[in-house]
Figure 1 (tube, one colour):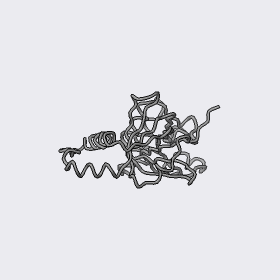
Figure 2 (figure 1 turned 120 degrees about the vertical axis):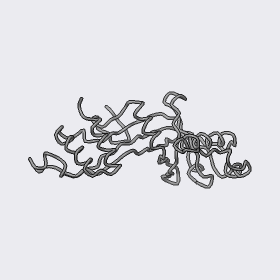
Figure 3 (figure 1 turned 180 degrees about the horizontal axis):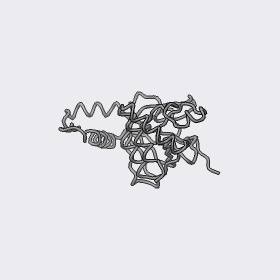
Length: 217
């Protein structure tokens, strides 16, 4: 029997590595959730996915050294990183079946990747500098003139590194959920695309494209 901490009916499961990695790259700000004797902890962190290391890859980032989450985490427990992609409200008015039977309700479409594994933390200055460089270089790609870590005074960067802790999650499971109207009749899925496109916001257009991509070929 299939078991997962994430409610994920078969029709919504996404398992293609390129899709999972693509979402994590396009939406890198993850919610890192841990549990300790103090209860649940959560931090919002940009994380880089390295698929080449370990059986399933690793996630790397950093958090403020003042953040108690890293001090309270116990290595025997699992951690969960949640990446959220495009999402949008779906109105019953968009369904063909609304006029036919009226047996419809509103819903929400979304895509997400849940990554589980064990965490390690480091205060090693060389590790932290490499991680800050990697994160900066990745997200400065969109700029016409990318900023580099070397553009700041070395002594300032050194002080900033003293204020953070490196985070590395060794992945034991990756699960994707693409809830994009697959549970509706084909006519409703096609009409939902039209409804989303009529809203015409960037978020609605993104979701319309995802619904289209999931249509039967």
